[in-house]
Image (cartoon, rainbow, N blue to C red):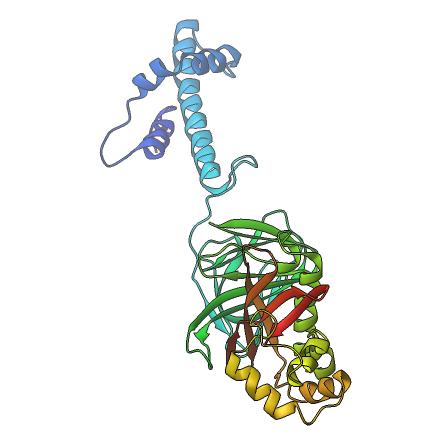
Length: 363
């Protein structure tokens, strides 16, 4: 068997390493393009066999230049692979789309970051289509959200605005239904914070809720909390909250305490004239009130007991979506949404400032 040429194996290796279907390797061109590598590698090589100086220099230079080429090609291949499989810390990987999932209640769903959402019967959410992004889309119904600590924002999107978690626990109730009594469409989002805080934002406004605060966002309206509405008198806000608490508790005595019983007793007895600003019904309603109760009550306390027994509250959730004041600033009308189970009712309770204070005049 003949002696293998010193350079043949390296030529073949180089050809295999840099060969492509489109071009043939040009070794001389590589030498021209990499003078520093050639200089460094050839200057540091020492021959292991003694040959005539000219022949040795030519042979060794050619051999080690080819070795240099192979080394550079190998390093380039490694670097190329590394670029495909590694991203620097200051250049995070591009986050691509992921499959969305629609979830309906009753159930509890836990996200990859440890956050969870409890869905009531009829509630629905949709997970996000971007991996690594925290939050979800609220589609319908009542949910309870517990947010795990994390560096990125956790945002719940809705048709009425976005809710960004600044704390850990809050509830949301989204409604889109028809009121049983008025047949009008009711669209709103109610948010209540049980721990921490949240930011509620839409095109009409932004507000931050702290622990035990709540807010209502009606369609095409700014987030609203009558307790934080500084345009309303403090006593009026207290009356409104008393009504809500009484209706939720189905407490007739607490509910009727918001009415001016002294005035109502005089009206029942015919001692004062009907005034629509002090009695929420019509003149005919006032006459029926006198006929039905005038002979049956002997004191404001008797009247209170009879009126309290007439309370027809179903409890449930009660939301004040807006309060409208008259120009004089002594009369207010609210839009109130009550929901119990699948039944939704819309009412417009009113309050008037007379006889030294704010009193409810209509339910």
